[in-house]
Image (tube, one colour):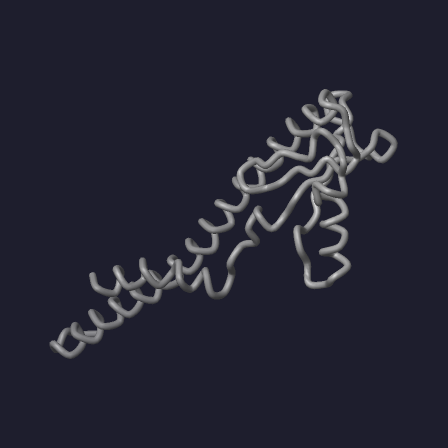
Length: 154
C-alpha cells in the first residue's frame, strides 16, 4: 500500500520534471488587419493570430512590445485579457472587429487550456501506470518466490 501511495506522489513530480506541458500563458494574441487575414470561420475573418509571448531572443521581445505596448499602439482599444492570455489590438481594429476577434480568441484559449489539462493527465497517467506496473510485477514476483520457498511444486 505504501508503494501505491509513493507512486501517486512521485508520478506528478516525475511528469513535472521530465514532460511538463507548455503552458497556455506563454502565448499572446494580436490582431490582424483585414488584408492580412488568412483564415475564415463561418464566413467571418479571424482577425488575430497567436505567437510566443517572450522567446529567447531580444528581437522576439521587441516584436512583442511593438504589438502590445499601450504607448505604441495609440488606439482606444489596447487589448483584452482572457484566462491569463492577452489579445493585443496591434492592427488597431474598430470595436466591432475587435469584438469578433476577441470571440474567436476566447474560444481558442479555452481549447488551449483543454489541451494543456489533457497533456498533464496523459503525462501523469503514463508515469503512474508504469510505476503501478512495476509495483504489481514486484508484488507478483515476491509472491511467487514465497510460494516456491514454501515447498510447493513448480
